[in-house]
Length: 331
Picture (tube, rainbow, N blue to C red):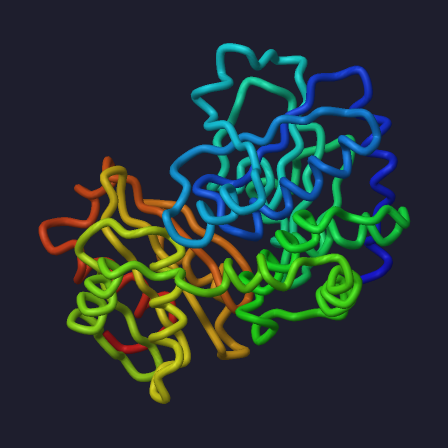
């Protein structure tokens, strides 16, 4: 992992004299928000003033609480389109250009900081700065920057980074690397235990129980594989939580949960099998009708509503069959 370590001062110098935007993946989660916030505050330390931007919605659960508790300013893509120029610089965080989960903006994507594997779709893209490390959380990379430069993060930055790490690694039980452990050890002395506790409790609303109930009612099991459809819109965080919940069943080693959105179906995929890569599974299952990707243990995907006709009259059956066949299980 260490051979991929980058010197963020190179990125700082590249950005001097330019208007800079830090762009998260669409519908940003705590890891994306913490990464963007931590990087923004680090760049401010060096005299730059980047703007954080995103597309989609901010979930009502953990993500929106981060913005309020840490006073993070993020601007929706549509709110900055009129002012963004082609010569402005964009730093993609927790994603890469053409990854399928990040909107293409008018500016120039000169850098990416990510913890997802580069795929065939974006392997050809050249950046002025690229730091892609296959670690548990993108926030861990930002923590490493602070540590390398011996710059003390603010309490809010440290706490946001710790929360992002804990959320993306399921409290250090999924995809954890030495980089994540060192990041937590480094940030621990700076973070606010009180604010972290506020973030970690009361993250569910009463209405979220409906999502649990609907998912339980609709679950189907094929061998080690479980799939469930939530027949109404709910936040990304909720879909992920329910996917983890289904994976916790003794019989299930691969779980897929998806919900209906006005713009399409949102998928969350989990795997604890060494022979099933979540990112590859969702990309294969949704090939031709949507997009998807992610890590070995966790991934996400999307089928836009305009592609529904390709699924026929029985969409749920078609979706299930796609995943079952992608796994090589008899349908």
